[in-house]
Length: 102
Image 1 (cartoon, one colour):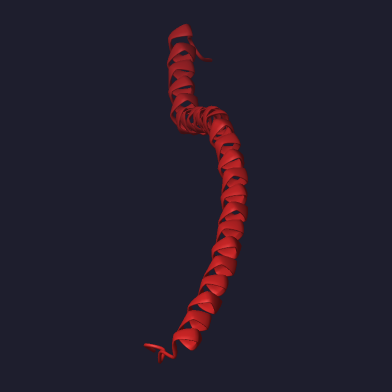
Image 2 (cartoon, helix red, strand yellow):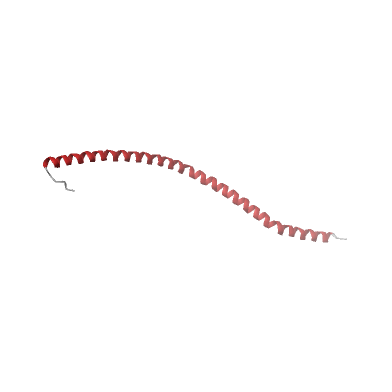
């Protein structure tokens, strides 16, 4: 028959064994959950930081479209002016009987 001392020793040994075997599992679970929480919070923070940048990019894209349109209009204007000027110079050269410099 077991004495109280024997039962106490058995409880101690069993308790130590349970703790040894469950400690890594508990530690791993805590680390996993901590990582998940940190990643979730990090993702949330990153998303919050990205939103203003997305809005700024949309604005920049709109501005670029407008600039491209303006550049096309300017190029078109100066192309017409150049052609008109070229015609005038050729007419003057012809009138004066000059050879083109080209």
